[in-house]
Length: 417
Image: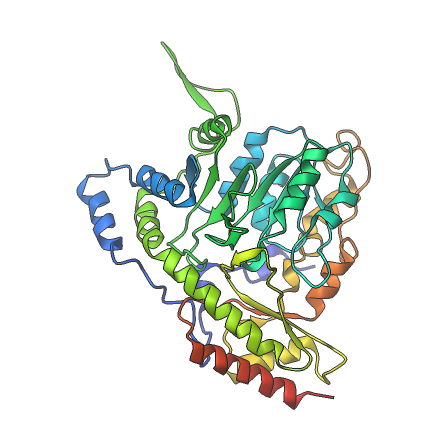
């Protein structure tokens, strides 16, 4: 059995995109807001006394139309402090999308909550009220929705279902910054939401993330447990820690870049929305190929990537071969994304549940859990024929969309049965 030292470590940011080639635009080098150097200089010139992170928090909250923004070093920490702030009990269940990234789950795992994966709705990468409802038990405490690729989940029915069962709803909006659902921004559709500003994300900084909320008490708890490490000052003593908190504070230099990126993001999102809808229309004209559906409820699609499905009965090649031919034809970053299926990708969940490692022992768990490729069969089947490219970005023009569709058509025609 291979040890971790013999395997290649996962890469993130620009390192994950090294060596990609193609005729279409790529994410890196990123477009940086023109005021970035000005804001960075302010931080340096202040002798590190300027609280740029607070300035960014105020600006992002204002742009989002919420009362509070709590800046963090990344999206994983943002969702982690949310999990800690909700203060559920070990063994309590959080319903979550199966098609996501480990960062969505990390906080749940570290707080000893049990992730329960609702299946995705047919033909999509997202969960729905219909797929969530069968997963609700007397141990369910919250629903963590993921707006995968930037497609916003149908939130009104999910919120209605949660209200019926007295459940907290919160959002992983890391891929949907300033996307709009029925005229409302992603991240403002529930009690709270986490965002990502990692270098490769839509509003990419060097790294970074945040939580937004209108809940005053939750915001204070997030700052206490997420920024102040669960510590408060006691007169005559100093810091006392009544909770195992975190020092997940956004660095001020990161905040400077985030602030500059915030100033250009809305125009970029509007352009991305226009380009992804054009590319989707062009791809849908190709027999046997279907772009990821954009629901009518999504007024503004803030896409982090472009995705499409192929009909295996229409082509003589496998999905992986189709994707590789797209890369060879000039689409950088095209490939399958089977690793997004968390019940299969998170091997430690499988092992812990099988071996009844805490919190899967009973108590605190109230039943047995199984995590594998059969946990969410609809999601598993969908990913078997789904191709995405992670280099879709604001640099696309109408000509690039036409070129991309032409490459897809050429590959489809070359492999048609």
